[in-house]
Image (cartoon, rainbow, N blue to C red; front, side, top):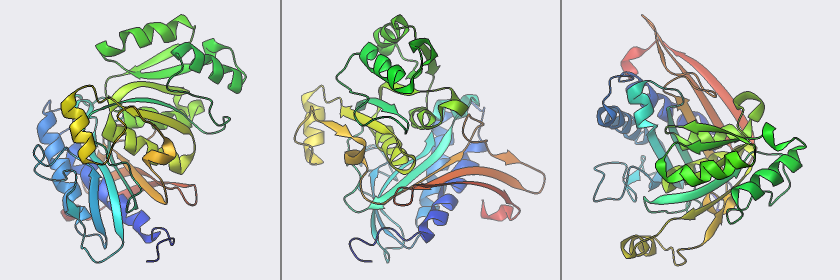
Length: 323
């Protein structure tokens, strides 16, 4: 593969198999209250399927750093080793708590890009702000106040502020942020978990009712969300929260020299990016896995940045042995 050829589009369908397999595995444990078990089966299934792909892949966003994750850790090599060199960002079960409680919007998620294209980020928190497509460049600014961002968005959309809805993770650390957004007159959709889905929801406010995502969540999820936005369109900024010497040192090992740097969407996920997500539980965007007597149904969205193609794949699997 030449340096500028981009990714083989055949990999698009291959990626769907990877997220389908992880989603089905996790869905068997929906509502059982065991987050660790659901996550583990999703990890096992995703890794097994990744190792069938004709790629030489390196996990840059995974289950954690090498000393804390037995598999799909940051730096692990996956694939058959005889194809293109790619970066992989993944979350075999985005929203482990959601799955354990059988609540909406749990997903199996993966993104791949040409080697060197995804931000190699430590497993720390990231401050994030994101909107969907159709707005002027620079409409959001991570350093502006919540009021300034909401007001700018309402003006650009041509609606009063009370018609804007922000998605924010329901966490004690966001109390002041929530207060500041509500003070503008905007509405808030609080989510318990799953901020990759939260960011993606900004791309279709007519369906999801969400215009902007604001707040602090995991850096791995930030990179995955940026990969998805690259494929659909939108704007996003992120800043790693490196608030201790230990975190700064960990980031430095990954090549991050400026702990205060604000990353644009294109800096978090550049080049040709493929993104796939399969619903584990029912959600605003994807239906969850459905188990029938003699078939399993899955619902997946798969996207590619170079063509801005978004495909929805509703599959009925009758060969149950493959799961």
